[in-house]
Length: 314
Image: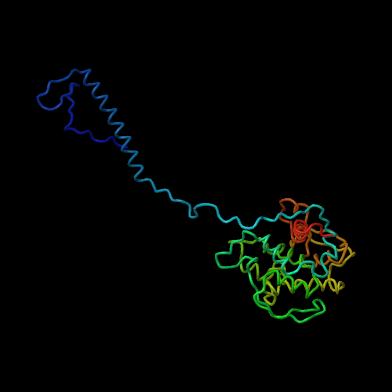
């Protein structure tokens, strides 16, 4: 940085070292001149530093705020549901009488439960509605062996009404369907940006094999629940048609990646076998903690959500 030019008109310094102020003024002593010069230099340096700082302030780039500013708390959303894994037994996840059987909750009970768990939910920015407020239309479903009562067409049903009608049609405990919605898509607590139309379209994970595109024939909240309930009954009605059967040893993988390994399980009952046919993986030891690359949580979370919401699944 070059030193700033001095004002030659304000002060002159003689070759002999004495200083004069203007024409015709008397000369001051050499010592006085040196003191004067020293003070002048100090003042000049201070002025130079001040000007440099000001110049730096002018040329430094302006601070840019983050693109997303934290301008206050966001809606809390539903309370997170922490699954209770205590007592989990891979060979006996749930008893038959808890999975299959007449509904033990009516539509109002189910809606009240959903409203409680979903409390605090905020609709997503794209307009996807919280499950406690969502309404559904359904086509009819003809009676089958798996679902002897079938379902009539209906409009403007609450989630609780859909679950109740499916559970009656297919003789499945409505608690199974509630847990399935949470295990597959987290729908009971999904809120805000995490609440998407896709979660409803594939609510029960039915027709969505790992690593493959979901089958569009089964898209839709009502269809997903109905087909899932019917499938659980098919596992019970035709066990020999499926790989996992009650009381027969079978090798169950830990993860879709074959390199993650597997172990042999002997399902204690039809219900546990059904869950493994629906979700063909078991949790490894790490899954109960933070998990690792080989962990899968589907059946572990089914057990854990059931236990925290409804008590023992046995």
